[in-house]
Amino acid sequence: MTRFCSFASGSSGNAALLSCDDTHILIDMGISCRRVCQCLARLGLTPGDLTGILITHEHTDHIAGLATWIKKYRTPILCTPGTALQLEYRLAGISELLHTAEPWDPVYVGGPFTALMLPTSHDCAQGCGFGIQGPDGLLCVYTDTGVLPDHRTQAYLMSSDMLVLESNYDEDMLRSGPYPFALKRRILGEEGHLSNDTAAEIALSCGEIDTRTILLAHLSKENNTPQRALETVGAPLEAIQWGGRLEVLPRYDMSPVYTMERARCSE
Ligand SMILES: [Zn+2]
Ligand SMILES: [Zn+2]
Image (tube, rainbow, N blue to C red; front, side, top):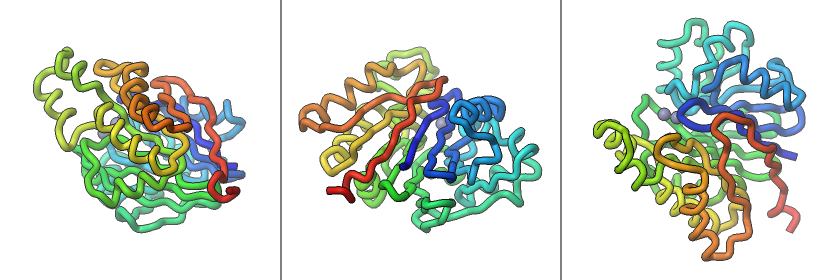
């Protein structure tokens, strides 16, 4: 059985765990090493149980715990070549742990899992989302992007069984909110973050195909609320009588453990 659990989600830190049997893949480490260890312990795991770490991009809310982690544990780290360069600038001793793959090049990440880096449009060196294929289906994690960069990415997300999708801001709240103009423009721009409205469009296209679980991620603290995100993304899904599960990942706390089932295979 494949399990997914978010440890934290939002601009104050992102980390999540994908597991199957003895394989445990951490996706981003934007919370402290100590908090990662605490979350692992709550799942009955130790740092040595981690098979690998996938990093989406070099922004602090995705790598904050790495500096301490790599001093203690020698876990392999996978990211794009552009992100790898940025990590080497920032973190001494990380080079020998780094493995890289270009977007769309399938890469084996351990146990039953193979990953694809999905291109994003974000103000970083070479950010990516992840499509991770395992025995119980495809998990896509897609955050920190201003837009969907191309049709291929959209089509790929639509083939996910479980989708972790950024739903960063409500456009009205952002426009009328306290952020300075330049920051508003950055977030709204093509290299910023996904709005609730855009997430709703993506979620609808996925729900229309066969995605059974959609988890909204990386919500802004100032420009969104979980309720607003759920309403905006949920309304069009309700209209098509989608029978799947739509939830918001907590900002600071661990999420429930979501399981992936072999729904398609058993039909
Ligand atoms: Zn982020
Ligand atoms: Zn970012």
